[in-house]
Length: 268
Image 1 (cartoon, rainbow, N blue to C red):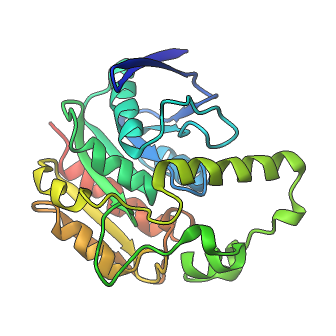
Image 2: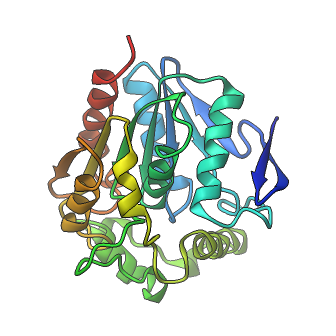
């Protein structure tokens, strides 16, 4: 178990992380921190397995407190708090030259991490991230959508990824409800952004690749291009026939975009 003490508003908040409990780890080699979005930890599990199986990679996938049936300490309420938590987790695990990969709000967390203590981070990959304000290209109000509408906006082929909560067990439904509550706490009930983030991203000094699905209708490709433009020297990659969650829909095409970028910028 790893207990991390966070300093939040001058108060020490302990957070416990136990492997196979609040984070998972698989593979050996170059370290990756893989951060899930609002859909929960299961949205990155398959990609973590693929990355660890197909490349020499050690992949750490934490569960954001409050997601996946985990508890959320009352003091942890913002994306910035999660960024602090994962910087501390890298310290506790004594990892160096880490590639931080985040999807959706996981990308938002990764962007905030790139503005903190980056001594242990080598590069950052933002996959259909949210968090900035782009006039004319808002992130959709996720909480106003039905599950079929979420799928329609999230995937190139939404029929393959429909979720029907009525077929779930009560425990699965409770986890799903908990995910939505945690998301609303961290990202805001409707905004999914921090109005200061876009300007602050000009201070990012890490190599950054912004990867986007061309059929993302949660945050459209123009939003993604604005994200890349806000970060000095960031690369923008558009994946065709893919949506808001390329790690689920087109993992075989996402894999080289993530790995080759990390390999290019590894500290030899």
